[in-house]
Image (cartoon, rainbow, N blue to C red; front, side, top):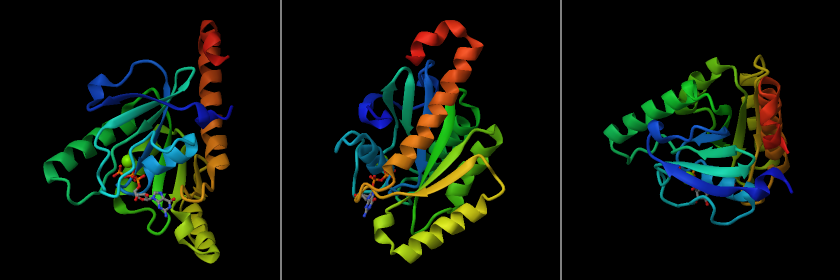
Length: 212
Ligand SMILES: Nc1nc2c(ncn2[C@@H]2O[C@H](COP(=O)(O)OP(=O)(O)OP(=O)(O)O)[C@@H](O)[C@H]2O)c(=O)[nH]1
Ligand SMILES: [Mg+2]
């Protein structure tokens, strides 16, 4: 069975103090309405695993999903939604900064961006908090079904060029609508988990059963 096919909802948390202690996790971050929840549903091949809404700013919690073997996916609250009151926006910004820069369980960041407007200032904030950790980042340019082939090639080239000097950052196009790009996400995220679990087994050979 492919990695995402076994994905199940685990829990919802509202602050950093209640994050699970165990497991390794990959976080999905992105502007509100960029298509995070849709991407998670498409990857898992389940229509209503993560909540998709036409109203931006819907995901205002940290949702945990489980792949099995203590591997988790974290759906972070979308940022940049203007209708959210300033005080709440500040709160989540601070929380995201803390989470991305200090969370030990986190092994990689999937940054979801609308392929029509990637790398906004807020996306760059996320990158600036996470890049110092040295952990890998995979940029997913969503809603690629809205672009023609030439536009797709152009945006892919543009975003790749931004990070040409950083081997820890990879980029791909994705469409939840057309289910395009699923294999590539699987391959990248799968390789992160494999590397993390191998490292854990090297450090603690008694944890080997978690890698079966
Ligand atoms: N055409 C097209 N529309 C998409 C795609 N992915 C998401 N959408 C639409 O974009 C809107 C937002 O999608 P969500 O998945 O809820 O976005 P989100 O990033 O989870 O948003 P928040 O929860 O507010 O942070 C919905 O109307 C989706 O149907 C895609 O690949 N193609
Ligand atoms: Mg969402």
